[in-house]
Image 1 (cartoon, rainbow, N blue to C red):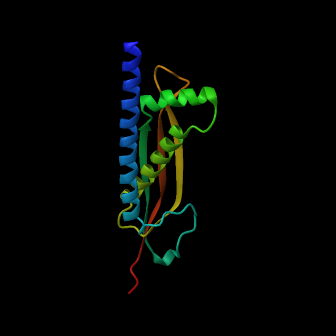
Image 2: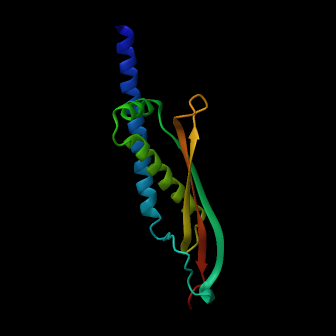
Length: 150
């Protein structure tokens, strides 16, 4: 009985510690997204008029985020019962937003990022090939720096 109490206590503490870390990461993401609003990022391939372009270059951002062990347990239970896998939804959302922010960081000094694309890949746990251990998100696009208008 004592083993069960210890296990449940550790799962509970781990779950709330993971939620706190996730909350802090979201807070950081929101602050950095507000700071990077001046740099529009679009999926369109359209470039401004060629005579206004000073420089174009490839920018990219990559992020690998892992789901914590305790959320993996809860997601496994949800897999048995069925329903939305919110633990994995937040994992993908955080990774995507972080990768885009890192791409924008690389494009400092540019006026716009065009033709942005996002790729994802599951990184499997080495012990369990059927469960997702982490997710990698790779964002890339073309940064465009425009000539100054006199």
